Image (cartoon, rainbow over the protein chains, first blue to last red):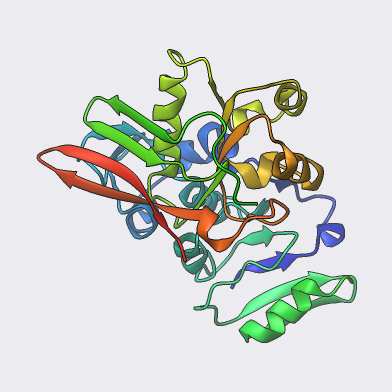
Length: 146
Length: 142
C-alpha cells in the first residue's frame, strides 16, 4: 500500500521530488527492468523495448524513453524509489489508478488527487500514521489542514 | 473568461508523420487529460514550430529555474504554450494570466484552478492515426 504525506510530515531523511520528468530522466531510467513493462503499457499504452527505448503508441516508431508521459514517469519514480516522496500533481487519472495499486511508494500533493479504484492507503500527518480505506475518508483527511 | 484569441485562432503544423491542428476559440485554452494522451508530444511539436513563428513562446519544466514569469509579463502579442503547468504556474501567475489582455495562452496541465475558465475552455487531446499519419486535435472535455 502507498503512503501519502502531508508536506510538513515528510521525514527529514526523505526527499520530496516535484520535477518528476527530470528525476526520471536522470535516475529512474537507469533502473528499469521487466517490472516497468506493464506500468508503461497500462499508462502510456507504449511497449518498453528494453534499455532506453519504447515503441510509440501513435505510430509504432522507436522513441527514447524520455518521451514517456510525466504521469508514467511519476509512477515509475514511485515504484523504483521507495525511500523518496514524489509529488503526483501532474498525474492523469490513468496514472493515479496504477500508483494507488502499488504495494509500496510514497506520494504527496497539496490537494486531493485520489484514484476511484483506491483500496487502502497509509496517511501520515501531525497525528502520526494510520490506514484509510475509503475515498471519502481520504478526501476528508487531505483537505484537513492538520 | 471567454475572451477571443488575441494572437491566433489555429495552430497547424507538421512534424514528420505527425500533424497538429488545434483550433483555438478562446484566449486561454487549457488542455487536460490522461497521462500518455500525447499532450507533451504536441508541446514539443509546437516548440519546433516556434523556431519559425516568433509569436509563439514555449515553456515547460526545464524552464522552472529561468525567469519565465517576468518574460511573460514583459510580453505583448505572444502565444505562450505552457506544459507542466501544475509545476510552473503558482496562484499569482494564474491570476495574471487570467487577466492578461495582451497575450494568448495554451496551457497543458491537470488543475485549471485560478485561471477563471468556463468548462468550454477546457479541452482534451484527441489523436487519430491513419495511413501512418497521426493527427492531433482538441475536443471539449465536458
